[in-house]
Image (tube, rainbow, N blue to C red):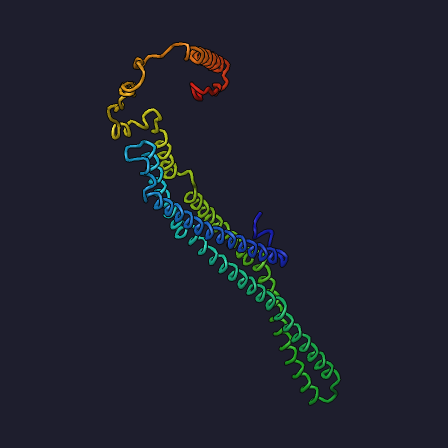
Length: 341
């Protein structure tokens, strides 16, 4: 089953033309798709490059040169710039490879459609001329010569005088010669038309259709290779892209929270600098009563306030322990002597 055996009729020719138009529309759609993909990849690569330039302005160094997070982020942005270059190269490869080849294939398909239509029309015109026009012309001439011969025969048969009879006979013989000669031409013309008809339907038209099918299948093979190349170039799981993402993942994996601030501590750490603790200022006792520095004064004037202060301190301590035991927030009580806890 093929073009040569299934599409020899005028209806088959119409179907072939419709198929060619549909395939060209499909190829044009593919071409527009690839052109848009090239444009999108270029724009995406440009955006990634712009992002990398923005980060290289100092954002990745904000945590300090020794910060592992900063170093990992710098690696990610660096790899992003590499990804940008790779995608830009892919866009150029798509443009110069599959897209260019597809545009060439479309032009070849258009030329094939034109050539097939012209050759089919030429075959039909030659068949029509040989099978119809030439035969009809020979038949018309045959009828005219047959009429002339019949008329010459009647005149010969009707001639009574010897002179007229000889003249009529001579004319009749010439008409017969013309008729017989044309009869032979007509027989040969019919045979030629039959051979041309056979040659047309059994060889020329099937050969044209078979060649057309072979070319179409070859172009489908070329289209398959173009699409395979398109997928290979535009794939986001190819080795180069995977390698970049692996480098990014490795940079993130190198982050160790427990070691994040070691470099910071090495750079800015120092020995503890504890300021002096407050002490009782004994100069306050120089002009006052005889009081002991740093000692509570317990007498009839202070005994009540001292007792109340001890009770409040005991309550605050117990409530704080209870809050810690049950998970509640520590109470915030206020005492005029102890202040707010």
